Length: 284
Image 1 (tube, helix red, strand yellow):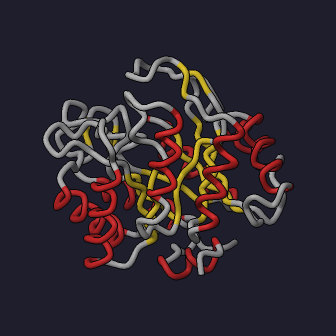
Image 2: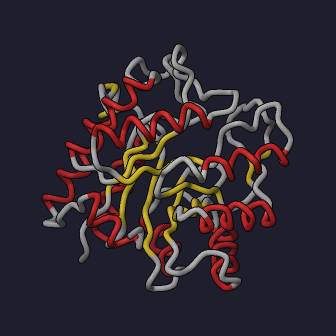
């Protein structure tokens, strides 16, 4: 079995702020320090959203200046694969502006960017409404931007229809194979976080594609353990879960990374370094 790639989603996404947990990093210095802790604990990829430095909420303006600074500062401090979100900047802006923001973000120096592979219902209130819009034409353009600028997409899939969209994008040679897919097991409006569901998802992928799992809340670590056993890769961190155990907030994303590392050690599965991750995902 190949080495385990651990992604740390350190900043929290749209639903995690200082109100959720006082430990979520929000300033540039806090985010960089948190990334360093996670890499030292065993993460080889960090996934980032732009955060309001005061509230820790998702930044509602143009997130690219923040992301540019994150990338530059992290590169100065430590070697890690940086994965930026394609989200951010949607509030109050029409889709044509989203296009420009995503294309500009592809030039900020990250090696990967996450991309939600279809339109979906939101399970919580959001300023942009109940529908999270990701049309096929948008996805094809954004994948094209990434490939043009040497960024590997991380294809986030929430249901089986999105797996089919990934296959269509590969068949049209918009993104070179093998693709890297992340199963987002949110439960409410997508995949249920169960071993049976994960096995079903994996069976739908071409054998040479790589895959990872993220799950919300109390399901994060159990699904990470199952993915580790099955030969996949894992994502942990505050974007998906802020608790170390029931009733106890994690004080750092690195606490959750160490949990994933300990599971892998018990299963005698080695942890991939950033350079090994680049080799495994074809980033070099």
